[in-house]
Length: 285
Image 1 (tube, one colour):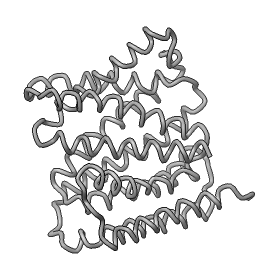
Image 2: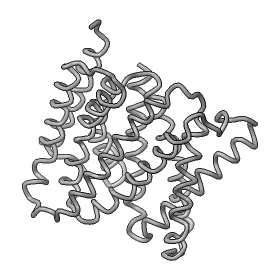
Image 3: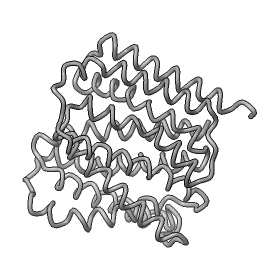
Image 4: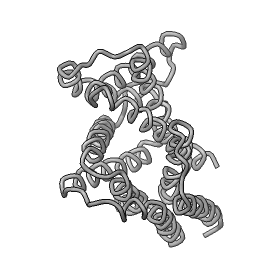
């Protein structure tokens, strides 16, 4: 159960990261928020290695191209989703995003040579049905977003799915230092100029939130990377829909938003799909 448990934890932490970003977006541009996030994560890794020499394992790698590609797609995912949600209603953007488990199954079969069971496809479809049920009221009231918004959402979803596949390909390389450092270095380099140019003086609270983003994204990244060391993509893909359940929880805890009947029914269907998918995955072929 380590793989599914870590997957659920990682998705939940990314949901909390999104909620924190939503709070920050009212007063700070994304470039500044991302700049501080990457700097804070690098600082946290450096401090950990100073206190506990060798923490996180070696930073060198036998697969520099895979790590470079992983850093690029992680940054692409962050930028694309920000641009998408600035143009689309949240419901429509999330519906595009939740095609990711299907993409993970396709990519795992194509690039990893893994053969997802028919049950994995079936329970992914059930999970997507739960998401569609939960988001249906929002979609019904939406006027429809521009084509460019959908293109950004699809680009972010492709990048997000590619991260999962790269995590799986790099599972044989021990240590978490590389997983954190290389994407952070690229992000810091790319965000340095726009982040400084658009800098807005933060309050003590917002600065703490930005620094906390670094710890959140670090913990979430490690959780997802470790999940793919313990389970294959077909087993983990349906758990991507747990993002709907996590988002309901964070919305209620932070903003006091009480979900309606369709949203609760959709969340229940997602939970059911995850449980049944796990049962199918642990049965002998």
